[in-house]
Image 1 (cartoon, one colour):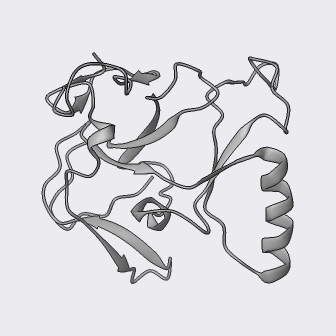
Image 2: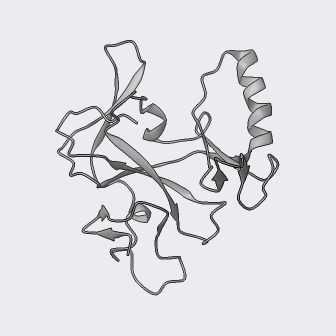
Length: 174
């Protein structure tokens, strides 16, 4: 299993039970599928960073916080959308699904091109994750790819976890 008591125990791809698995939703290997467990709050930051996210209760290290949700599109579609956003001065919330990307060869391991490689775009459709701010140096959260519907490393969910214990009313930053 990838989880123990709702906390992540593996550092690579997380594999949850698929919809065809006979177990119920309380299975210890369906953490991301169960959704939010901790109460979070979107708030306006005082530092001029716009909106941010904070916890409303204590969160234990390595606990699942939320899934990064957005529209799934190819990198080529993302490129054209970015051109549209740039012309309208719209801020974007995009994440490249690059778990298949090989940093040494600068190519996707499965030979994907920009018409096949995928991006999550939370600009038009998303959840609390789109309000999380970036923290340079010491983020208190991290994300991992999660396989649920398929074992294909090209398509996966993005789960966000606490890097260490988070205090009540603590900022949640990536």
